[in-house]
Image (cartoon, rainbow, N blue to C red; front, top):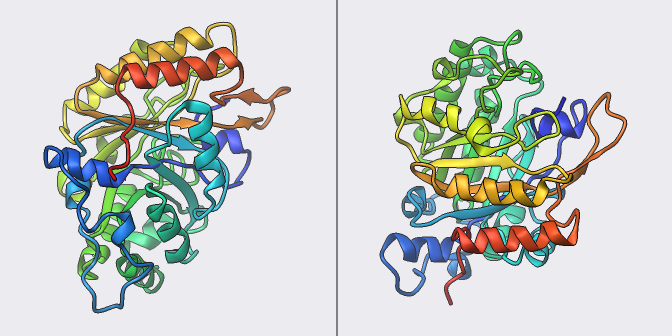
Length: 343
């Protein structure tokens, strides 16, 4: 059953996902317009010395419009998925998200390449082999400190989603494997180590799966607190086994989130499965997202994937048909998703 890109990838196989923000225009939008600031991608250097101040990502934490991102295969510095999605969807993506195993080092060169291309990298950090209790107790601090220093030296912004879908039993850190208290303690400890290293160029996004019959765990106990994150992210899909419309797929969870958090909301991973209703569901997705309180964007899962036990792969791609591609481009533009990079 597809619950997320984790399940769709198959057992313990990690993909690169793409989510990209045209940061120069975001900064302009936050300030009410004007030229891109000198700290935009074209003005940054690949890396700074350890003594240099980190990139200032504060303006990006409250973007002035709706982002349109993409989830797809490829290493962080691989621009082919970004450019391919832009050609298919009629708009270059605004954020590029990619997955990385806990224990792997940060890639400054790859992230810089993406940032210089006009996308904000989003790192989804997957602790497959590191128990949350060990992270929270400081048992991973040597790695964590090194990683925070590597991120600090990178002269650009980085969105980090740690242990997404923590409320899903299919993850190694979800129900049956770790408690909500374990997750909160690990998240806060990671955040505190980054703070102690003065790694302030990070935008923290907390990313549960939408609550449904297959994901019944309450999400409130997993919330680390307003002081420990910048965005709330949600993951959910249109079919074949998840939701069929925005009202039932996302709205109940958004209502729950708004009962305890007013943070900006990002649909961090979504897609519409190929089928007779795909065009109509594309319209429903963008219209519903645009009408959601405090929503800053969505990320499209642009892959053909077969999940364990299925007979046929599911086609989430925007160009699974010519009609679908045309509708994605039309709906995104009509609902004002996506920024244009300022000159």
